[in-house]
Amino acid sequence: MKTLFILSSLSFLAIGCGSNFPDLSSADSAVVETHTRVGGGDRVSSSDLSLIQIRALAVWLSSHGTGWTRKIEDTAPDIMIDFRRGGVGFGSMNIHPDFIQVGTNYRPLSSDEWIALQVILGNPGDDNPPQ
View 1: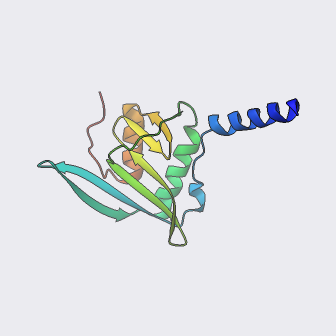
View 2: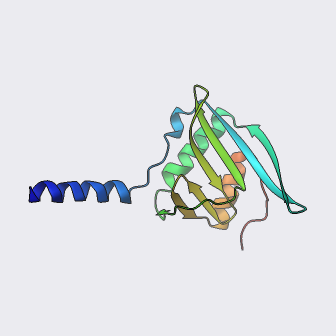
View 3: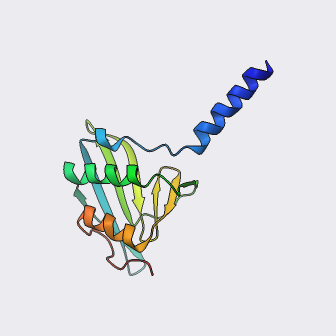
């Protein structure tokens, strides 16, 4: 019984500590919404991402696997991407000039990382990187 408890605890820790990201390689479409603050309000524009852009985001995400922490909070979107498979949403990504959030996974962004994401997305947001 003690061994079972220890194994269960270790499994819980392993699951809790890993970054669980949606499998973007299986996405067949994605919508990017760019939120701009105008006169105290939120102006939203949206467009579709190409499969090349979706794959580039998947590569970016897989090559930036360190520095993530869990953060459970509702953050106002700047650039919100909803990934879909067969017309059904299965994951989202919230990108700000100074951080990225995927589900409950949060990671600060350097100015170079912000610029790289802007290049992938075709510069949909504020092109002023963090200082």
